[in-house]
Image 1 (cartoon, rainbow over the protein chains, first blue to last red):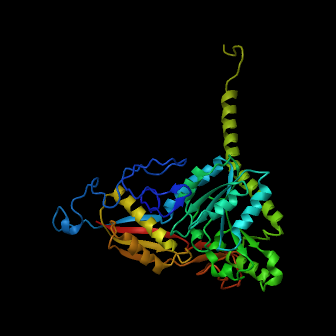
Image 2: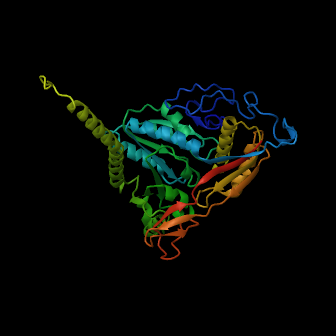
Image 3: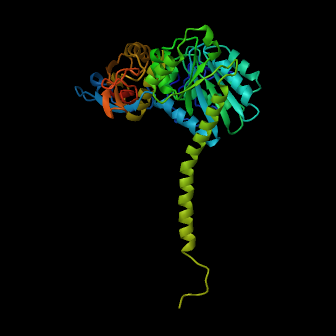
Length: 320
Length: 113
């Protein structure tokens, strides 16, 4: 990863080009970001000797012989703070454009992409849609999405096991997407790593198919803990399987008592209406949540204005 | 293997602080990795050594404090020791538990020259 802005060393790619700066670490950083970077890009990596003012390097090479320069530096900073900064930038962009962004997470083969194409086909005439597809390699999934007519950008993570917020920032530059609508981010098929990386989404949506074990929520608790809703997919196959739906839901609630569960099948359409309703109600809920502080601000401004205006009156000389 | 990108994130932050606080060598890195943070400590050690090479933290000692997991049982209305997200409340055997501690992953402090 590039230590200035988190760009990867040529591994991660947004379709149509690498995210990285071709390994040239003297870059002056003029990406065409719509989000800003929290640095000026003038630094050098590793041993910034050119700019450092230091008297020797530690005890043995100290300018005052025998005087140790060793010291403790308190940091108290989250290891994910950089990712979280990018996630915050994405989130404010989504808020500004009224985009309801969802981070779809699951193991490989849960039917994420089929569920997504079914969803897109059902909703594309009523609301604008966009998709960011994460996979280690290939643009197959983005192509499947584009067949529905919805705009999609593929992000290949190379050796990476998850999408991070910085990749999403770059992908958003490439996505032709109207202001407002739904953005689906299909994460890399992996039930471990994507749990910790905030992308700026409104919700993480976990997808689990009934062809997997009902104890998956217990085996991969972090992901089901991080998700707000669980789509239990491929329920049309239940008659052929020895899968205990109730036990699975019980397990999911053990790691996350607040998780909502929707049973569905992307191929037969069963339960999909419930999923669309969930999307709509949570989209409106987010919008209202974002609106609430603005309403408070407006009320404040109105109050101040009223006081100012009413403190003066158009009148004919009350003064003596 | 997200520990690898976490380790890279640590180096990023260290290099940022090296600039701001004017140091050029790091001899010790102290992390706080909570029990519920989804980080494998052994894997983190391995990845940290790998990404430190040719950086100002090359050869730095890695000290990891593993903070215990803490939860709040909503039924018992009290704090409990909570070491895995699927674990029930030791008192009521219920699962209505909110994580209140042990999910952090922090760089606490550095020993620098």
